[in-house]
Length: 239
Image (cartoon, rainbow, N blue to C red; front, side, top):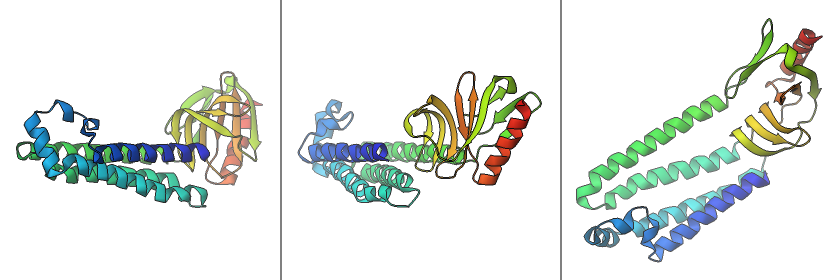
């Protein structure tokens, strides 16, 4: 929780710093501004483009800071709300700022900003959809498979131990995966186990721990009874 809080706060502070710099005249902070013709730079400054860009960043930062306390409440989607606000506010803001472009480049700016915004939202939407799909543990004749994002298959011969844990060991760091307040999928550092493969819904015990020759796997279902059924069936296959 504190790591996510620090990342969100650090991002907001960065936006505040950049926005303040732009409002104070550090227009070179805008990508490509310093290499544009002097005439265009003058027009953009007169139209208020860089100043409004600074205001957009400051407004985004303030909104993120206002939403930060949600992380310490029972609301399960605090990170998603904060990130979603940042994304929509920034992308929408940059589309709006296209109206302050120089006339000869305004249409192109609209096309680029709308295209980037649309593609970004679609890709993130797909990622979120896949990330929130419940993993399934499928038992086959000689192997078992975990479906979904970061899923894979292992032979029963690779299994060294299977157990149910009432409490999930502390997850300290994401190595390569999809991790939010309620879901963790992929490679994570887990206290006492090192780098492990997670397919977990946070706060939904028990957790099925599968120790293989090469890695530790943690997985659970949205219902405790289903997780226990997985453990019973998998244990039966390796005995």
